[in-house]
Length: 633
Picture 1 (cartoon, rainbow, N blue to C red):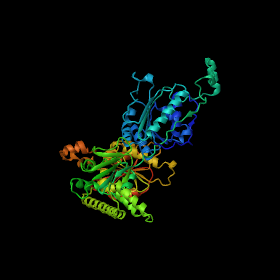
Picture 2: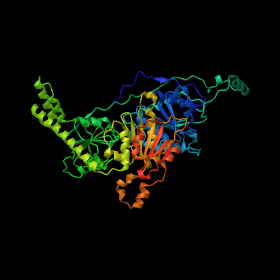
Picture 3: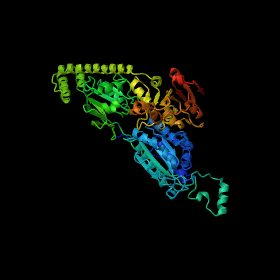
């Protein structure tokens, strides 16, 4: 199903007059189409073959509609664009690169966009057909290079050298419209446009009229206004195709029992919280679920769930799990709960690539509404009793549909009200047990740092979490939050995390969004994740700097492996090949790349985060005895 297309939107546009370069003509038409279709941001990496896209985007009529961001590193460019898209998927960003190896550096972002279902327009410039497979410089097989990951791809032929024809422009615009429709479709994700450009790659600059006429006459050539390739000729209007946006699917009934739990994985959204609270069910929510709040939330559930699932007779053991989003963090969830043979697993996901790592899901629905006899009877208990017959009929129908066989209104109401009371007691037992176990767990300084960042993030803020032990620390120890929490859990990689957060910050602070106080964006990462994306800190002096706090918990390597089965490896092997100490002064490295950077301990982190300050700030958190308390500003 789809929303009705905006019939008030322009049905097309007239492309600019010819620029003297077919490549630039086509680039102008593409950017005009993208602007009309709602694209607001483009991230470009420098290059020559992609130059027509630079000249096209630099036209005055486009500068105010599409913000251009430049990044030297193509991977950073791609993840910056992904961050812009993650903040507002209805207005996906574009990433542009030149030909050759530059295109390979986009691959990690394309993979994450695919698995996270985030719209992303990938535009790669290429050589024309006559220069392919003949050893031409910086030319490789770009067409189809992301084929298994993208929702749409096209390899557009190069337009006519001096002046793109109307057919070539219509083809390019139509293809762009299809690509954007696929990116924002029922199954959103990345799309790839490979654009071939032949020389000239720059717009033609007209000489003064007298000089041009004299030169043409001397050469026996026709005057400029007689030249079929002359600049300044008007163009025919191009119809712009708009596909209506998909609408949410109709909810399908899912059975609710007294021992059902709701699992909210990454990106589950508020629907998970609403379902759990409506039916008084324990909510096991990952930090980036978008549901980590409310009366049903069970903070600190991972350690408790491991105990519960190890004992078939445990009084808190679930008999059904309703899964929303994509769980990726806890083995107690993914393996023990969702892999148990006595737990009925129901997945709520509108897409065909639903998450079911244990392969035990009995039912998949696109959206859920609880089929709950307790709620049906509870509602009947409040029915106006002036029409006893109608009320009794409604109660009987509710009980029969749930398989209870109830026929007496009062008895059903009393029984199910007692059921709801029992669920409240059951939920309270979950919360008490989880809190008791969590309070008995050892607390490390890294966890203290993570919780300081979590607690500093409020309703207007966005917290971006790297893929490390820190996100698991928060899953075990963090309480409810009103902040928006985002993590790259599509593939749970550490690629481009800083650049991603920078893109999110650029989107959040965009003045076109009209937010008087857009809040702060914070990134929480481990030291290896930070080192892996140092180029994400490089923001040129001509570029808009993101308002971003990067908090790096520097414990000298990958702590996450100490919690995996590799912890049993010989210490020297574990240290060198898994935890991989780096010996890098992260504050100095960040400062060298242009960020305001300082080293601090957990005691001063909360104060540092509470101090206002624009731009890019890096806080490197170290253990007290290892701190040099150096400050580089």
